[in-house]
Structures are given as structure tokens and as C-alpha cells.
Figure 1 (cartoon, rainbow, N blue to C red):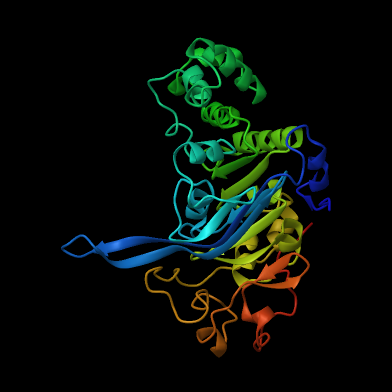
Figure 2: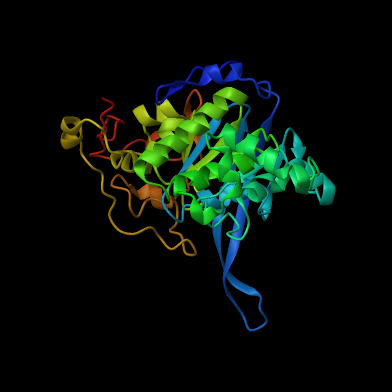
Length: 365
């Protein structure tokens, strides 16, 4: 079925008309992903305490779609992106690409799978070798995977740079000679070199100024409409996700607490944490912005190595009730394609004083 969800002025159904991979032929399916990192070790070097950066997460990215993952720093969204891109291996759970389990892949098989997905990192300067030309950076994937010879690297780089709106003459320059926006376009050009069907963008605009940020987002949107590219967009900025994503997953302390079509989540946020994130998004109209109410969460996020009992958000939730300390809510569907992990909607109902509206004080003007 063609998705006709509208997000940020775009029509998701139009992406199936792109000239790239046919819609429905590619998919990433992640199930029950868990990833822990050691916090401290004993004298023998063995971990004695761990933090669960990702704790039982399911994620789907289908052909021609953009899925946004949003949350605060420390929510686990970047770790989830690294698991999806196979840069990290999960402690448990599975990542399937086009129906194939990636857990047992090694060597050439893993290299072949990785050609189908590429990553754009947060810091474009840090992801480029300052001692190498732009031509070298952009054409390197083609050389490594034996698509071209070194002698043809400059010509191939110039073609890729043109695809992302850069002058071919930049191929002979070095990263320090480019602006931040140009460097990020170079990173995108390099990611597109092997014609992947999935692009994993980890905070691709957070290091850029506002106008350049808009240019990069519009570039990703144009590339997707042209080629049918799928995008997993990781960001702390709900406005960025809202502009580009068809679906959004909201993460808090390693878990997805709300997931659904972007328009549905923006118009009818169900989880109190989602409402707080959306209330921080600025509205361009000054009159509307002045009349909006900001939801300010009290206190700091709990220590991820020592999570509270029950709902891990309850210590900051203004609607917490006694059952929240006893029940760990799981993600459950509440409407078509829209799921939430909150007892206000899937458990014993709202406590006294909880608002009946789910708008969270946000105006959609």
C-alpha cells in the first residue's frame, strides 16, 4: 500500500515514483536489540557494572521511507543508529537486511551487505582525512570495492559532487578549504558512491548553521525523491525530524516510548515525554509562539546504570501514578500505526488532574 502521509509539506507516496530501487524491494528489520557498555571493571578487567544503551528496541525501515529517531542526549538513539548500520554488534536481538540475518556475516559477505547501507556522521570535518583531497575522500569507497581504478578517481568524484550540488573543481581541494555545509555535502556524496538503498544519517545538521541546515535537509529530500533512497535519521531536534521523516520513534533511556506516522505523533502526542519535546519546537509565527505553553521537565534523567522501578520516565513525569512504579510499560498500539509505552493510554487510565487533550499545549498553526 502506498503511504500518503504528509510531513512538513511533503507527500510520502510520491517517493515510490523515484528512479531508484523499486518500492517494497528493500527493508531493514531490527528486533529486540540490546546493547550494553561497561561502566567499571574489576582488577582482572572484567565488567562489574553495565549500562543498557539500547534495551529491547524494534525498528523497521522500508524502501523509500524516512524514519526519524529522536530523543535527548543519552537516550540511545546514536547507538541504535550504529547497530542498524552494522558498525556495532548487538548483545542480543537481530538485524535483518532484505530478510537476511546479518549476525553471522563475516568477510566478503559482510562487505557486500554493507554496500547497501552507508552512514553520514555528525561532524563532517572529523569524518574526512585532512591530508587527502576531496576527490580521494569521495572516490575511496569505489576504489576499495573495486568499482573503479585509482586513475579514474577524480572523474568519478566530480560526478558525485555534481549530484549533491557542488562544483567539480572542489575535487582538488582539501577539507579545511571547504565550509561546513560543503563538507557535509562531500560526506553525502561519498555515502552515495556505492548507490546504497539505505542512508543512516546521525545528527547530519547539528554542526551547521540554520540556513545551511535547511539546505542539507532539502538535499536529502531531493535525493530521496530522485532515487527512492531510504533514510534512518537520528536527531535530538524534533523540528529536523518533522521536516524529513515519514515515521518517528521517540527514545528515552534506551527504549522507544512512542512511535508512529510523523503527522500523527506531532498532532496527537501521547507520551508525556513526546509532549515535552514538541513543546520545545519553535513555531515561525511570533504570535502563536508567544501563546504556546512550554512543558519543562523537572529534575534530571535517572542514572542509566540505576534505573527506577516500573516506568523509567516516572521520576520526571507530571502525571505519574502509583502503578507507574510497579509496571514497566511496553510499546503497545493505540491506533493504526501509532504505538506508545505509557499507562495513561495502555494501562489503568489517567490519574486525577491529567489533561484530557493530547495536544500537549502545542499549536499546529
